[in-house]
Image (tube, rainbow, N blue to C red; front, side, top):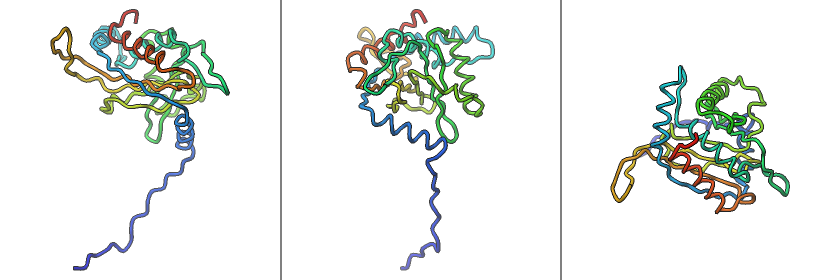
Length: 233
């Protein structure tokens, strides 16, 4: 039996690596070349959900998600661990005096990382408002170039896409990046008994030239503790 072959095959869609796509490709290649290490911890988000709900009741016209709560806790942890709030330089790394957190925003044709400046000086509500404004501006293409400059650390979240955990690529010259997975109910053991709690996975990727494994684990543990207690947020 003869099998009929199509007279012509469809041409592949070639996407040149230029413009935004080219910039992303070059940045990711540079980040991949760093001697990076990934650590992950699960965090119980029960306290975060309670705090978020309290703030939401008082917020008018502003959605308070888990992300600004994480941003607030992260900013406090970065202040405590200045070697992680740092940038790589030629033959050195530079501890930065200000905490300026880049927030990865997915676009139809790429990825943008606008920066929340002085994040450690802002409340959760302020962070929620600024994050929403920056994300909208990035998607609309209306942010100025300076809105993407000066970041000292980056956060990337794929929780809304249903991703449990992932290891993001460093955003050079930054020393660290945090990946946020989705928050979902899981069975946990408390006091020898099984309970249900909203859990998420915190994935921390860092440049081993600037940070060793033990202080990196301490940083991640500090962030986890802040999220699980929400004290001082």
